Structure formats: C-alpha cells, structure tokens
Image (cartoon, rainbow, N blue to C red; front, top):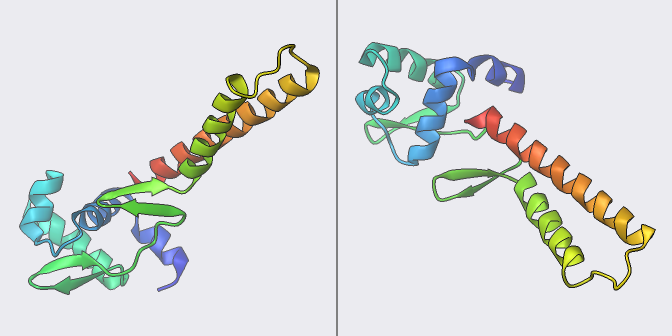
Length: 139
C-alpha cells in the first residue's frame, strides 16, 4: 500500500497497537496486545492487528505478530525506545550554548557575543520543539 494509506490506517487504537508491536520487538500474540494496551477484548485487538496486516505493516511470525515495515521517519531506535533525530541537534545546540556561557565567554560582553547566544538559543528552542512534535506523532 502507498504512504497515504499508512497514514489512514495508523490512527487511534490501530496506531497504539502498531506502536505496542514495535516496542515489543518480538512476536506478540493477540491476548498480549489486549492485555498490554488494556483493550476490552481479544476481538478488538484482533480487529486492529488485522487492519495492520492488510496494510502490510505487520506480519505473522512464530505464532505472534511483528512489525514488518517501519513507518516512523527521522527516528533513532535505542533498544525499545524511539528517539527523534532532532534530539541530536538539541544536544549539539545545548552544548554550544553551555560552552559559550562558560568557556568561550569574553571578558567584556559584545554585541557579537550576544547575537551568537541568541542564535544558538533560538536554534536550541526550535530543535527541542521539533523533537517534541516528532514524539507526539509516535507516542
């Protein structure tokens, strides 16, 4: 299926099921999905897993279901966590700001120094905003 249909399928409870399967990283049964997400019945879990199967996003393996196709973009996977790539920019700009405020601080404050601080601070805030926006899209 094309990317537009992925966006259509990955909403609400179906998106929660997809994220759950992704985070588990191993074949997960229907009852595990139901219990893990607190769904009302196994048939509700089965319905959402079937939607993901039809969209080609998950596959059956070893008596359970696993994510077959990753649709999260600009993410770094560390064990079971997804971290937005923008986080690396946030760390870089935070480090640069810290260095400017400590090691690279001039003896007298100049307009160039203040401008540099403002630019780095704006870049830091922007990168944090983008990272949070990416996280809200997946969790």
